[in-house]
Image 1: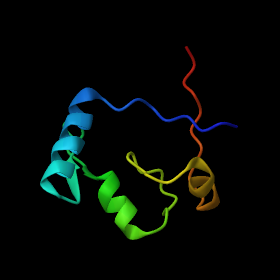
Image 2 (image 1 turned 120 degrees about the vertical axis):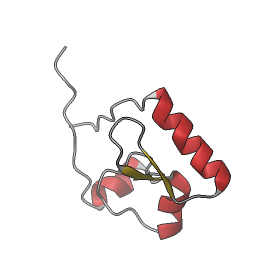
Image 3 (image 1 turned 90 degrees about the vertical axis):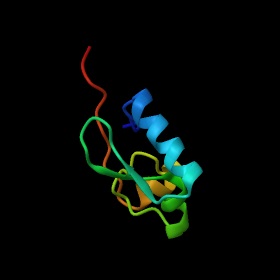
Image 4 (image 1 turned 90 degrees about the horizontal axis):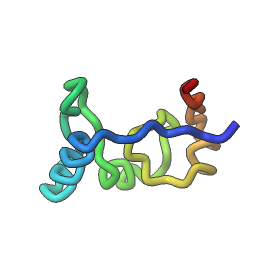
Amino acid sequence: MPRYDPPIEDAAQHAHDAAEARGERGYMDPRSGLFVMTAGSLAARGTCCGSGCRHCPYPAEEQAASGRPRLRRPEP
């Protein structure tokens, strides 16, 4: 089954980009209030953790090998 990534909301993408520009490891998601790691901080780890991180910088093959869960596309 192909991987499905839900779209990232504009506000979350803006928060991510601002955190990256400041060199921060992550940001607080504007909708949920949860801490989300930036692509830069995930890349600094060196390997994919397989948790399905929102900004994972690793290719799909590496994510799958690390055990990343596959999401089903929502029914229309």
